[in-house]
Image (cartoon, helix red, strand yellow):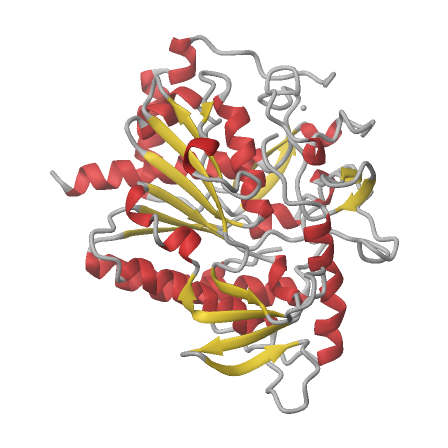
Length: 428
């Protein structure tokens, strides 16, 4: 199955009934019940710790990979293949894995989900090279902007980098809200890694004055970027944006200070728009803010929608994700709602990327949707844990650590290398 973005950009938007949209709300509720935690796994085999020379790789291998990168290759089109070497790390070698994603610590008995690797159809996706990553980011800064799945990727990166260096947690020095905003400093490399909490990416307020609850109506100001990230963009050299399941929550949409519609608000006098409208407009606002931000020269990366894999119900109706192997080719299709989310953001990204090129800015797409659609086995499922309560929950939204989410950071490093090579080439 292929869902390449350039093949479906002209896809006709589906018209979804209000009932379908309402049915999606539980996915969002699950996302916030799981909680929104921070820093983060076992008795399985890990890749051997490299020496400094082997970690950097052979010169001939790097040169060959660099030549492939310069030619261009779609690393997001491929398949999962068995990888008997297993993951890069475990909970003995990485001590920052949070309980919510520490699947083996929480009692998950199987190990096969740890032994698969993404292989592109037409080229090679290099293994994650922590030393090379640090070489690229020396003296720089990186931010993940989004929700708890964005944080999931950042926590994976912390573990991958622990093979060569451990950071100082400087969160308390820079923010009082360390539940949602975390910062790490690698002194040896003068590198700062940050996660900025912005699940809607745009300005958000509670629509009701009563106590906040999981199904509270939210006001989204779709033309106002969330200041949590917008005020800091000039400080970062790499920014990875993402968002997802929060947009299925009941919301009121504002533009220029006025209500333009809602989703799942059940108000007779307000136009009932889809979740996809809010999702599309939020990314449009993000990209416009960056394109118009004076002095911004950072590398902008959009990580595409991460599918959930609930079966036989949702998180609160008995749903789970019990599979222990990836799907085979043609065994699964992207559900209509996930395809609409994917299309909404990719269409906005492509338009912004064209303008970015005219302005000399670098916008990159990390297209993880198809690879992750094939990995129903990579979630905590019933071995997920709630952060705020001592209980297990069915988590088919976040990803186990270690697990297939580590592949996102292989993609990230690949993008960074291509960007560095092409930037260097353009200056010759």
